[in-house]
Image (tube, rainbow, N blue to C red; front, top):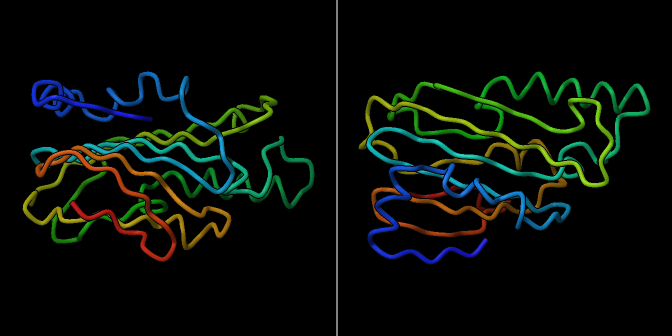
Length: 173
């Protein structure tokens, strides 16, 4: 996704949060195994964002589970996604509380698809916003097929775009 913002549109984007990014995300996102995306907004103690990750990067396949091992792996992934701790970690000092979390995939719904993705939307309220200095991506240590995440962020210091990897899984605000 290419994003060019003026000061006015950046202000509006900050108010809209990551859903301003997400509106046309699916229309323009390229599906590439091992590569996902993260769109993040950090404003006034609120952290919200969305991931889009190919299911192949998480399960090793994009088809509906066929074997017992594949079915178990998908069930384990679905269970793990109930808590945002599975995929991200915020500084403990920020005292963040998970407000919402929604993980969806056509595979979870039993729908066949040539290219299945996992879409995750999340939000937190943080009691100590001054301690919000970074976000660590926990998924890299759990899913070796996930090689990188392109992260687009709007925060207190402005807008930035970085690529995160297993070697450097920390998005610094």
